[in-house]
Length: 335
Image 1 (cartoon, rainbow, N blue to C red):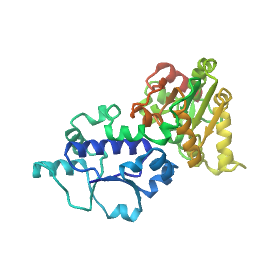
Image 2: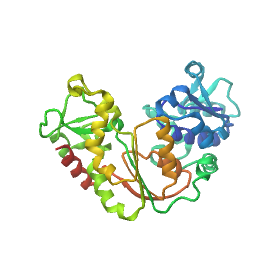
Image 3: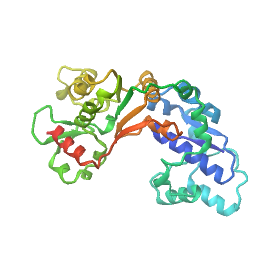
Image 4: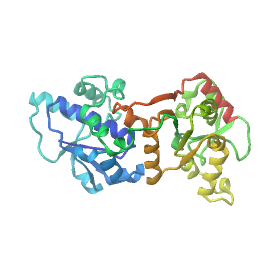
């Protein structure tokens, strides 16, 4: 049976592949490949060459399908497989035309079915258990083999902004007000997050630039090379209104936000990779695997690829949103 990947992010895709293979192995069903919709590559700014050849997923039977093909398959969820398993006692085969979508979705019965089929609590251990098949594939990839001799003086820093970016009110300079995710909607008041940051959905994923500045100040003397990468302010810039943009284009406004809020961070680094495109994607992943220390916050991309494949580096900091210092720095930055 083939696994079909939804049009989600790369982290989710690897999680789905991992989950799908483990479940098929547990049910003693043949694993026959992975189907990626064409739109997946457009969304994630990644090429088929990089994913299939450089990361070696072609050896797992990975292939691209059109949107029409995606719609033509009969898709089974974990709940469907659980029902079939109970009816047939032992699944020896499933009719052609069926594919398995190993996502958890938001349906409680599908989540419970994942636990049943995986034989462990999916939402607790999915980041810790990696199937041997996928691990071996990544370990034998050309990307990993090319980075066997990595530099011991390199620090790799990843800063996720994207759709969780927050900025102070830079248009009216109104104190205690800030924008989160979008600029064309109502502003938020800092009082909302001082005592209850969970009151704004997704907000606790945001890390302040001040936090990165502080960490880099303490780390820069220990490294000859510091690579800083971020998806930047593209997402939030696209939501700016005409009055907010003034005479600037959206790309110029994005450059302005980058310099204003990331300028101090960038001044402390040797190499800068800002923005999402196919070229930058490959640079980010190659710099990550070629460095011996990693710092991240808000996202485990691209570290999860190598961590789960048992290719370890010194994960110096994984900035946690529950960190009280971080919380104070967010409030300071937004003021």
